[in-house]
Image 1 (cartoon, rainbow, N blue to C red):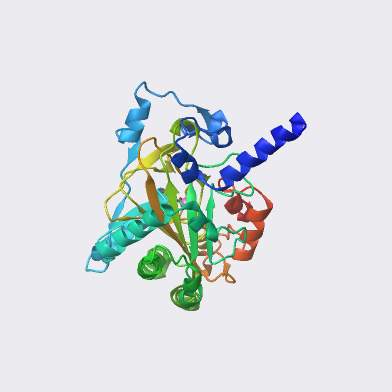
Image 2: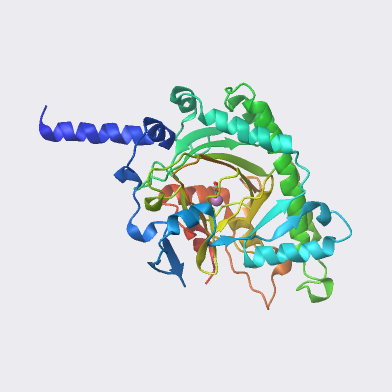
Length: 393
Ligand code: OGA
Ligand code: NI
């Protein structure tokens, strides 16, 4: 064989290996991060951005231990007590909720009524899924973005030049009776635990969304159109309750040999209304806050909830869809389950008419899911490009 061809074969073989995911690499016991995963230096995690300009972050000598140990640059997100939201203090909690959505784009929800067992079963069954032999997991690999189940690696493995240190299982959740038979049949209890979890998070999403609509509603005397546009709320609530799209992503971040050179997930914002994220006890999620990357401390059994692009559009920019990313670490496997919620795929998202008036002109174009899919399949989904493309200057 000619040397050039031999080299090409090696490159192709490696490519195939990388397409199989990072769990594979970890299990092989690699000590060095393959070049495929090494980010250009300005995109590595020990970089901080300032007013949109990135500059070299001066890491303290014990930076790595501090970062992984969680002593530095951590953030206490606003905590929303769901039980209190349902009680006599609702008005107060709605204010905290509005503040969180405006100034952080993120909050944590506690006392949410989803049983500890449902949560631990989901983490457990997710962990066991990634523990299956590759042959079993790979049955669910698919290039079709609309497949009811999709196993894969990186962020967008067909487009990414540099791969991320993440494997994932994406599950469409609506309509559940139709998609369930496509979900993994192994581990044997996967469908049962994941379906219960999907239903419970959907219900929590609906309750949170109701609170968010309430928090956005202008007081009658200050409303642009005092005769509140009830129809829009009702139609939206109905769609969110009965139709709605829900996508669940089980993320697996195996220990990474060189966490400073790569990311588990690159900076991105989420496309829907809200994402309910469950993280195990290993920190890794970072959000951009006041131009710094800060780590979200896991609270056991709490949900990290964030505003997605659609809610930013719907609120005409008042609530912020904030960039976030995931760090890897050298010693512990991390599992997270993100539940992304939005309107039915064919539904158009637009700024809520009752917020729009002379004082507050419409700042975003109407957007549907098809436009989003078209957008991400036509260019690399990086940062907030999609949302930016919907802004009216
Ligand atoms: C996501 C996400 C964060 C995490 O799935 O969109 O941001 O901690 N996940 O896994
Ligand atoms: Ni996300």
